Structures are given as C-alpha cells and as structure tokens.
Length: 169
Length: 351
Image (cartoon, rainbow over all chains, first blue to last red; front, side):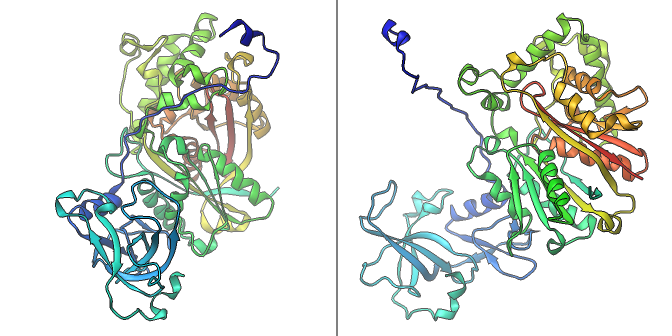
C-alpha cells in the first residue's frame, strides 16, 4: 500500500475477500435415476401414491402430499403440448438457437407437471396448445443431462384441447 | 403462558457420509415417520419451521426443497432459520405462545459431507477482520481449549473423559455415529489434530435430519401419553468478535439456563450439543449440573453431529427421556457460532 493510500482520510470503500469452497455434489437417488435414464434417451416420471399424478422428472417425494414416492418410475414419450411460452430477445449462454428464440413450458403426454425447455418454431406460428416433439442431440453426445434434448419442435398434429392443459396455466 | 409440549420426535441415523441420498431425501422419510408416529396429517399442523444452511448444501435457497418433505399444497404457514433446528423450534414456540398455532412441525437437516465443513464454518465469522484469514472451526476451538488448559480451568484428562462417557452412552443409541468402549489413557496417547485437541475431542462430521412435533394444551395430551412440557426456553447471543468474549466460560449458556429456569429444580437428564469436549465441560458448568444428572444419555453431539439438526435432536432426545419416564425433568442445549457463541437452553418436564 502506498503511503498516500495509508494516510488517505476517506473511508475504505473496497475490500477483497475471495470465497472459494469446493463441494462434492450428489444429485440424490431420484434425480440420479432420471439422469441415468436420460443418458439412454429415456424420460422417467414418477407417480404420487396418493392421487396418481405423474411428476416429471422423478422425485423422491410428492410436494403436494408430503409422501415418499418409492414406486417404479413411469416412462414417458418425448411428445407433449405447449402450455405457455415466451419469446426471448436477449442473448444467453449455451442456447443452441439463434435470437430471438422461444422458451417453452411443455406438458409431456402422461405427465402432470410441466417441463421447461426450448422451442424451435417460427415466431408467427407459436401458440398455446401446439403439439411438440423433442429433437435430441446425436446419440453419441448423450450424457446425464436434460440438455440431451436440444429443443422441441412442432409435430404438425392438430392442437391439444384447452381442457387438457388448462390446469397448468 | 400457554402450555406447550414436545409430542413427537424422529431422527435419521448420523452418518459420516450419506452416499446416495441428497439433503431432501434424507429428510423425507423422517417427516413421513414423524407425522405417522404422532398420528397427524398436514391439515392439523398450524405452523412449519425448519433449520438448515445453504452453505452446507452449496446451493442458494436449498432449504426450499425441504418443503417437498412436508407437502406444501395447499400452501402452508412456513418459516425457516439459517440455524440449527433448535432455533426453528424456538420460533414455533413463540408463534404458538401468540396463539398462532396449536400444533407445529419443526425440522432440521444438513449434509455437511458435501463440502469442507471446518472451512465452511469460517464463513460465519466477522467478514472484515477474521474471515479473510480462514480460521477453520477446529483451530478456533483449539485456541479456546488452549486458553482453558493454560489457565487451569480443566485438564486434557477431563476432556477425554467426556469422549469416553459419550461414546459409551451412545452404545444404546442406534442413531449415533461414534460409539463403543474407549479408555482415557489410550485416547490421551493419540496424536494431536489441532493442538491441544485430539480427534476424540471433536464431534464427528455427520449427515442427518430430525424433526419434532409441538402441541399446545389439551391437544398435546390427546397426541401423547406423557407430553414433555416445555417449562422454560431461552437463547442468548454473545458478540461476534472472539477477542471481546470470555472464552473460559459460556456466559450465554449461563444466562439462557437461568432464564429457562434450570436452577428451579433437580435435573434428571441433560442433552448437550457442544461439539468439542472442552465445550461440553463449559456447558455442563454453565448449566450448574450436579453429579446426579445423567449427561448425554444418547451420546450427545460428540457421538453424532448432524449439523443443523443436532441441537433439535438434543431436545428430541431429552423429550424421549421424559416420555419413557426415565426423567421427570430434562434439559436440552443447542449451540451455534464459533466457540459457543450462541446458546439455547430448553427445560422439559414430564408431569
């Protein structure tokens, strides 16, 4: 520190105290099961033993009833319905789409919870109720990551009826 | 004052490392078993309060995931403290005193094995003058132990005796991590970990969770044959700067014990969560326990130390002493911060 800084009458306005801690993270049993399955191209959900609703991805408990979910997982197809969406015009890292792109909330067929993902679709075509299907990375790039799905895109099927997804809006 | 009692307690085993389960997965079966053992459902619970630390999880807002274990739809009245679950219990007790709830669910959970615990604890220190030096928790406790030994307040032998006692007591506790028969002489011949502390002077690092149900008045009698009534509870905080504290005694434990009324009558059993042997001695002294008190019948924190749940578990273990009729009057202690900075004392009575 220079003599001038040491004698400066003003308050000390900056102090550096870097914090770095390392963690050995465990995803947990339920998330691990989901991630190992998606590494094989499978999408796993789990059924609440109280009301039979299917949570996607798998989780160890039902957050509604506070009960343990320990039953066998339910395998879901990679098709579903666009529940709602947003058109994004600010850049972000690791997004495989050009700006502007669409973030989407998707209700997979057979699931009762929504999945947040990306939608590759013309901006003038996007609308709620649209039927969508996952576009996967090449198989040799699959890892234990939900990013194995690059994005969803329209299937061209007729729209899903409003009643089939309205509770998720 | 309303009469409020501990009517249910469940804990997970203290493990050095939970290999597969995450924090929430450790907690889920604890809460499920707790509700089942007391025989209540969410609609009967008026308030939920938890204690955990995002620093242990290494994730912001990690505690929110804990609500998965509770079941939070329809929405529940809920709060959280970034402290041991014993302080969550205190908050719930205050809410119940205000007439806000008749039944409360309290839990604490932590998985410190994910990080470097002694270093993580440095983050609770004064951020300007102490934290940048990264004094780890064991080294700070060693400085305190040195002060006590050099000034003749206690001996290494007395410290080792606490480890022997608590590990022996823990033999009957299926949830304890460190248990068995040890000899003082052998322990004293072990190498130093952070002089003057040896390994046996330090509580283990444990992953775990525990939960308690509190109930007021008639509701408590309905839910439990012999409720453990909370007849006194208080917590006191000392300053953050270690240099301005008297580290050779636990002033905050003394004041908390006085306010909780420990002195009013005999104490049959005491459950203390001081994580170092010399701190066990300081807390025993601060509480004024006599030789007639059974100290740490469960083994206490030295036998199992699931951070953020260990203090709450002391209240649960003390309550069990009361339920089983082994103690008419039991005292539980919880601590937080370096070198016993903050202490909570809770008196439980069976009759």
